[in-house]
Image 1 (cartoon, one colour):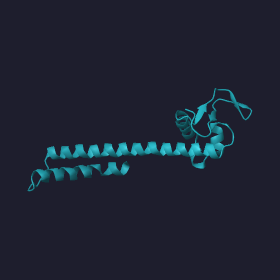
Image 2: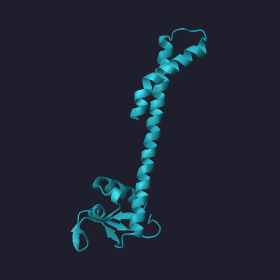
Image 3: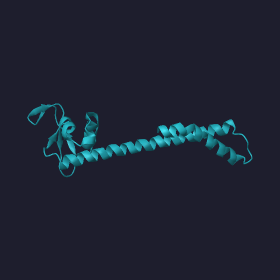
Image 4: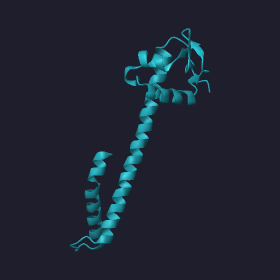
Length: 140
């Protein structure tokens, strides 16, 4: 986004020049109205770039959630897990508490894990947060 934003004023000027020449091929000067149109179109382009960037961010989160789901299915033998377990043993690039909680929420929304009641024992210790892992197809 930063690269697109830094080029936006230049892009607005180019668009205004093209609009000016479209209206009058002999024009020597870009008038205020054409510059305003150029700015409007350049701004639209920036909004679209941001929208597409945001859409790809969603895809990254979905991809990360799928990576975590596969790891839970293929590598984690127990039926329950905590964020602490994931930070310690989970996929290396996902070992961040905030990220893992978000990914577990995605998996929970799709029925791959279920949040357990506070105080549920995992590994013989009552846990504030723990999840049941559903093997095979999603539970919901």
